[in-house]
Image (tube, one colour):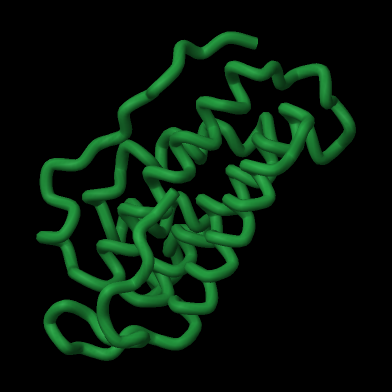
Length: 155
């Protein structure tokens, strides 16, 4: 799982305050990860993992600021490309998985097997950790980190 916060809540390693909304979203991401880890069905695991990542991505956007303007991106995954390009491999992965999660939400539970669910949970765990480090420690906190798949994509 993740390490517990080692610093004062609401502070970064540089001493700058973290927006309360970002902290709330990180807490909700943790709750979704727990739900994913304790779900017995692969489709539930994938859905909760994706929601955990979505909450963590929203926390980064809340901490860094929402892009604005006529052509500003509208999804969390697209916003991350603007406000946190260092999370690009994860935002691409989860953006591509959004259609699968939508299908699961529509009742297509058969589309997710155990290996795919495990992959999603592992990726979400890593992403939530990276997002937390970024929110609390800035860009240097995740230098060199990229998405690494722990299992082979199957069903």
